[in-house]
Amino acid sequence: MGQTGPMSISALSSAVSGIASATARFEASAARTARAPLDDLAGEAVERMSAATELKANVAVLRAADEMTGTLLDMLA
Image (cartoon, rainbow, N blue to C red; front, side, top):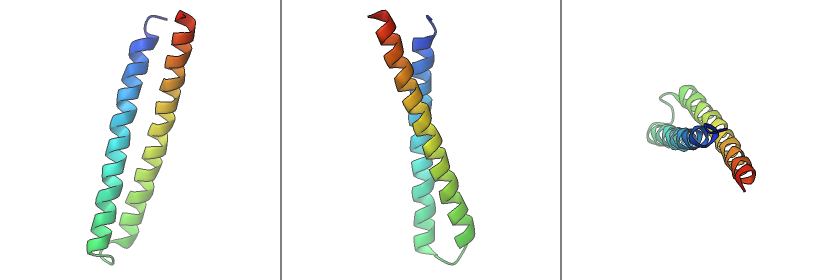
């Protein structure tokens, strides 16, 4: 039980970093498409779908870590 807190904090940190990374990838791809829409339309669409999937996965990790933290706090109360 003693490791749940630090693991939860690590998961939160990792999820937040992943969300920031996915958001940056999505924005960069959108900007490239706006500058030159026909250069690599398919590749950029795949990049944005991949970034969106990464974002969803990191949000799921964030929710799970939040739930674990809540459970730990309930146990300690």
